[in-house]
Length: 529
Ligand SMILES: NC(=O)c1ccc[n+]([C@@H]2O[C@H](COP(=O)([O-])OP(=O)(O)OC[C@H]3O[C@@H](n4cnc5c(N)ncnc54)[C@H](O)[C@@H]3O)[C@@H](O)[C@H]2O)c1
Image: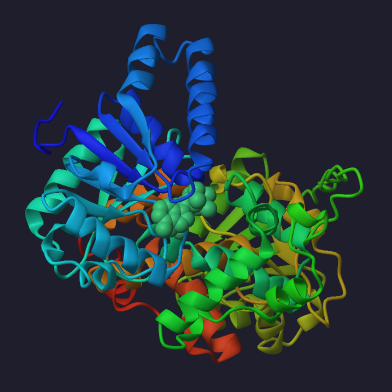
C-alpha cells in the first residue's frame, strides 16, 4: 500500500463537505486517517455522514461489509491539531480563506515536521501557503472534486517550491485512492476550473446580448454539445453568488484579462437575490413545476436538389448526409463558375473567412433567383454574409461543427433581411432545428471554440500537458471529450475559424487565438500530437 508514496497515515484538516469525503476515500482505500476540525461539534456529524455513505456503498454492492468495518476502525477523529503529529500526509480542507489557511499551514508545519502538507484549495496560491512553512518543498496542492469519494479526478498542484519527489508521491498516493491524477502548475484555478471558465462566460454573453434565452443555451449545450447540463442549469445549481465570486477572483488573478471578465448579468442576479436553486429562483424559477422542453421542429424537407460548397470536412459530411437521406447533391470544392440548378446551397467554408467570402458571393451569382443560400455562420454572422451578396433576402445561417453524428440538433439563424423561410432546406439534414440569434458560432460552436482556446492558453503557459487537460475535463467535469480531442474531432482549423469570426464581429481581444491554437491551425493538427 505504501508503494511509491510512503504514506500510511493521513491527516485531514477540516471535516466539512470536502474533508469528510477525503477522509472517507482514504479510509476505504486502506489508509489510517485522523480527521481534525477546529469545531469539535462538526466531528460526530462528519463520522455519521461517512458511516451512512459507506453503508450505502455496501448496500449497492460497491463495498464489502468487512472492508467497511475496517475502514471505520481506521478512521479516528481529533479535536486538536496536535493529533496530526504522526501523519505522513496532511490534507487541509478548511474554508477558502487565505489568512486562515496560512495560519493553519504555519502550525501544521510545526506539528507534523515530516509530513507532506497538501491543500485542497480551489483558488488560492499554493506557493503563498508554502511560503509560511519552514520546509516549503513538502507543500503542494491536492485538489479533489466534489463529492470526493465519487469523482475520479485529483489535481496534484506543483508550487515553485514543491520538491519533484513530493509531486511524484502525491500522484502515487492519488492512484492508491483509485483516482486519476493530473499534475498542474500552481496558477489560478489550476486546470479544470480555469479551462471551464468559457462554458459559463460565453453562455452568459449569448444571453446577455439577447441572442438566445437561458433554456435555449442550455439545450444547445446538452443536445448539440453533449454536455450533461447547460451553463445556466449549472450556475443555478452551484449558486450564482458563488459563481460570481469565482469569476471576480479569476479576473483579478489574471490582471483584468478580458477572457475572464465577469458578466453584468451575474452581478444583477446577485444584487436581486436570485442566487439559483437555493433561493428558489435563479436563471430558472424553481417555485413553479419545471416546464418540459418543447420538442424542436423538424419541418417537411424540401425535395432539393442541393448544392454543398466548401473544401472542409463539414462540407464533405453535409454532402454525404444529404445523399444518404436520398437527396440529389452537387458538390463544389470551390466557387462555382456556371449556373447551379438547385433549390438551395449549403455553404460550408468554416475554416477561412476570405475563401468564405468568395464562395458566398459566387454562389449568390450562380444560384437560381428563388434558391436559398444557407451559410455556415460558424465563422461569420449570417447578416455579414448577406451584406456581401446581391440577394441578401435568400441568406440564412446554420451553426455547427463536425461530426454531425455527435449533434442532436441543428442551430440556425436568420438576419434582418432574410425573407424566405430556410427551415424546409435545413430540415433536409434530418436534425431538429433550434433557432438562435445571429452572431458567429451560434451557441455550441462558440462555447466549444472558447473552451479549446482556454485549454490551448493553459498548455502554452505550462499549466499542464494537453493529455492531462483532456483527462481533467472529462473526469473532473464529465465533458464528453477533452478540449484537445474535441478540437481534433471538429477540426482545429474549424475551431480557430469560430474564434476568427467572433474576434472580427466583436473586435475584442477576448477572442484572440492562443499561440498554441494558432500553431495548430498552421499545421492542421496539434503540435504535440
Ligand atoms: N465544496 C466543494 O465543492 C469544493 C471542491 C473542491 C475544493 N474545495 C475546497 O475545499 C476546502 C473546503 O471546502 P468545503 O466545501 O469542504 O468547506 P466546508 O465549509 O464544508 O468545510 C470546512 C470545514 O473546516 C472547518 N474549519 C474552519 N476553520 C478551521 C480551522 N482553522 N482548522 C480546521 N478546520 C476548520 C469547518 O468547521 C468546516 O467543518 C476549501 O478550500 C474549498 O475551496 C471545495
